[in-house]
Length: 118
Image 1: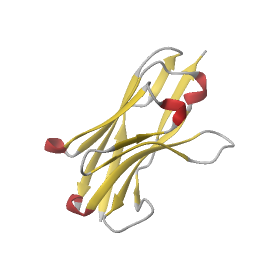
Image 2: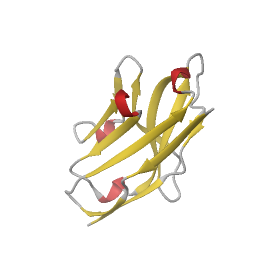
Image 3: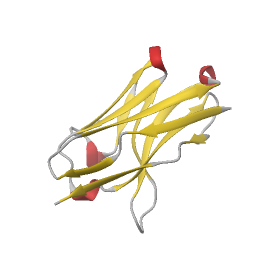
Image 4: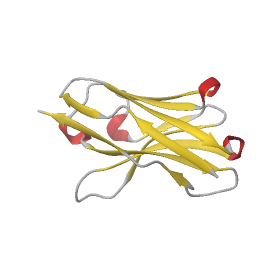
């Protein structure tokens, strides 16, 4: 089992920055990839960014050049640095973990609210 705990959400003005963190605990050696998803009211959950155990990253087109995902293996934490935030980035952000051999993300955090005011 893997447990995920997000932090770092909040209210920020457009153009501002926030950094989300996700602390991973439990069977961390079973994890192949970590991701950040978001879900805005009335919209489907979407993958914002992901990072594999080898360090490969992937971003949604809407956040490329503005968001950066990184991992600090020493403290079992994944970060999402969000710069140049826009009102359309407003959503609940979820941290997720995918195990080796799994196609879908297997574990989810409770979510953290990000609100960007115009």
